[in-house]
Image (cartoon, rainbow, N blue to C red; front, side, top):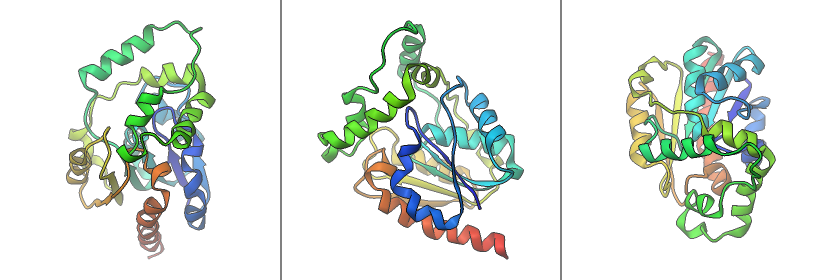
Length: 234
């Protein structure tokens, strides 16, 4: 099995660094590139062009929206789907307004990564002052750069609650108990909308589960991947 990892907003492949070892026994890991496009559809199309013939999808946050679009565009290629700290809801008006402001910004404006305030909000309240963790998240944005920031900020998330019944592959939904960006209710909506899905809550983590609680996430993903492997072997 190939595991295709889809990052979140302004996150690069180092988002998954602490999960590489526990996921490696299940097959090669490949990373989706979300830097270049300004819509979920175009992002999914690009990922599919570069992806192997079949794969297990693991999507985080914005990457969960992209992963579901991939599953809609090419359901025959998606063996299983894991959605972490994501939602099925559309952008709020405030989010849309912020995206319009980014779209209007001059291309020459320098970009030094996401703000400290924005990053701190994405973490567990107890880690909001963890400078090493904040810097790790900020550096992902710095590496991606200003063009990726504008492109990803322009992506509209219209909401896909009415389309969830199209997902028929084995699906895992993972939420964080202290996520201040995506509520537990949003993950529960995904779980209710995708028939037969598995649901897990990771305690003591904010939104950035792969960085804040990688071992806990691995402890959820590993038995699920084992069950997926057994299903395909039977």
